[in-house]
Picture 1 (cartoon, one colour):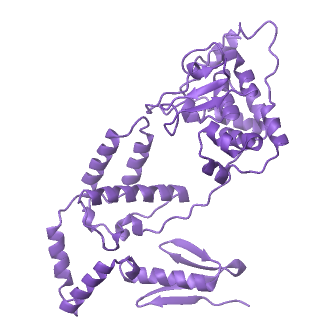
Picture 2: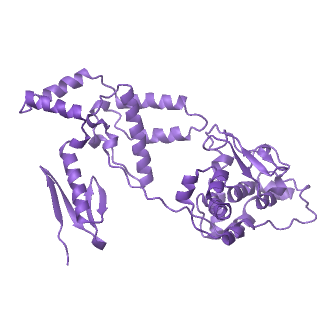
Length: 402
């Protein structure tokens, strides 16, 4: 039997709740579609939104006891609230006005002075703050004055968090008055719902194809990601980054370990990564190399307008390149062999993060196939000691050298 929509109303604000598939109920608030498992849950939440909207973005539950007592005193002194507008004007004139655009520049200058080794975060932060209404005074900005959050849920969450951080900084400096309820304008925006996706991985057969066809200068990067879980940024940092890339001097071939320095690690902490037999076999031709590992160009970037990116070329061989799948695969397969804790430590992840993302339930037999992928036997005319391959020269020269 078809169910009729239900209208929830509080004072002059109303929300219509519609039946959805599977006995679910849905309604829309500020362009955001909300689905709940029962009509009662949907009605309760819709009523909360109605009250919040009617009260100008604040629910009575948000007020502290002191604020409620203050409101009571105001109503007792002015029951008809005839002088509220006059009071607001007086308060605005009393509060120091700060232009949003100027405050953003001050905030970004402070961030740039303290950006550390990686300015990439600062660039992203500047992009998020550029969307704010720069011409307005900070004290005048309300939730409706903020631009609509667009893009993927993760992008919307990151932008909202950037705005919240900026407004809290302004609050600490006294650029905006203490808001009623304690929440700044960005905090009153509905938090996007982010659904955690399962990291994509490669099969052993796909990795075999990739390793057999990767350009020589990118082979160390691929082997380190697939058999040691290294991030691309740890081997080939962003051009604007001040982080030091992984170097051949970080390898202790006798002890079979790689020491990742704090200035190389993404999280700024040193870690020790074992050189597994499979990784050692693939890096055998590079054991006498010195300095930086691989080229400075990201494998996903095109070297020139006529050429295609290395990842695009390789992806065409296996049905498409999967972003970060080499590292994801290492953690997933390595976890099946030694456990989540040890695999997370080797890859520079927390065990909690690994449990959320990489607990795929694979068997040890499946994982062994991944770590049994060995390079083809080297020709007798080209022993490892004579094969002078440098990861820092173009592919054509590497082929000539071999």
